[in-house]
Length: 127
Image (cartoon, rainbow, N blue to C red; front, side):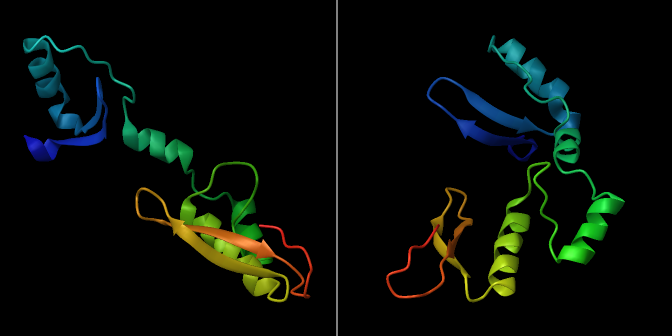
């Protein structure tokens, strides 16, 4: 059924789909019946998500309390954490840092950058 399979990527010669766990046998059977070649890329999507986004450790929670943000350079962060860090920098250093939105991603999420500058005329800025 349509709601049990989500298209993640539609290419010219291949398609990536997400299949709800309880429907995997049925989808495999259907693909085999139609003699369509397939391979499973991720066995357990939720497990992959959990491994990519582990809960904050006690040290990381303390870091949030001390520093006011949860950014570290030890693992990949969610976009909302990155945007939160950019906003934190702008609030902490308002005379040096400003946040600007330069567009949207293909998913429609805002693309933010920070401008670091003293604000003096003719001074250089870093983006």
